[in-house]
Amino acid sequence: MYRILFKRLPGNEDIPLPRRMSDLAAGFDLHAAVAEPVTLNPGQRALIPTGFAMAMPPDLEAQVRPRSGLALKHGVTCLNTPGTIDADYRGEIKVLLINLGDEPFTIARGERIAQMVFHRLPKVCLEETDELPETMRGAGGFGHTGR
Image (tube, rainbow, N blue to C red; front, side, top):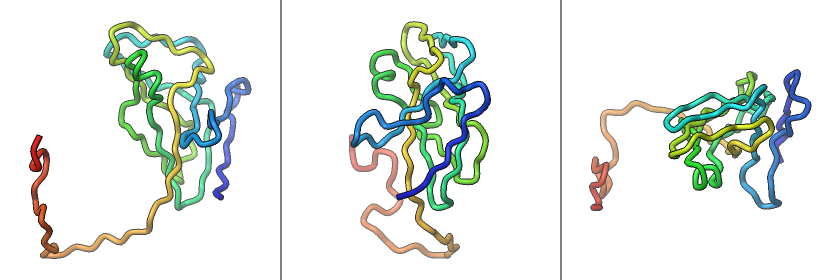
């Protein structure tokens, strides 16, 4: 089990810390720490604060992902998805939201706006070479296997 430290930022004592909404949920819901409601018009984006900072072990990353209900019901999703939070970042966690729906969407203080999933990172070593091993796929990309 990994220990993640959360620090509430001043003025956000009423904002819940990230939490799983069910026992087997992969993601921890993130809540908006906006001072006043923020309305996103169709096509508009905004950086929404969560009211906390965190510290995690160096072999973890946190990914910020959209909430499926907001995407389905309102067309509100996260840009730069998944957004990566590095283990050495100590600033406030913020969520970049966009309204891809047809109607304005208002984000209220304390509303669940995204989810955060933690992942273990493998240790890797990048090595330059003049030749790569052959595969059946080769250099085929973007739609090379058909529709």
